[in-house]
Image 1 (cartoon, one colour):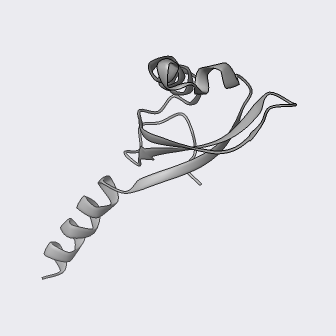
Image 2: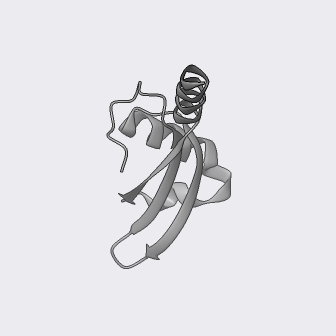
Length: 82
């Protein structure tokens, strides 16, 4: 019984999704035509395989945006999950 619970906990931990808020300073990439470029840029900067992104506040005056990135917690990333 203990072994089954331990195995289930490990399986659930492997598929846990994490998110991190990032301040992004290249708002030109936020256009839907540049989606692939945005994802590639964020993955290169963070070192994680991004599952999805959510754009929060955009400050056009400062040319910055708040982006939430979602990624799997597989333990192989350079970035610490929060």
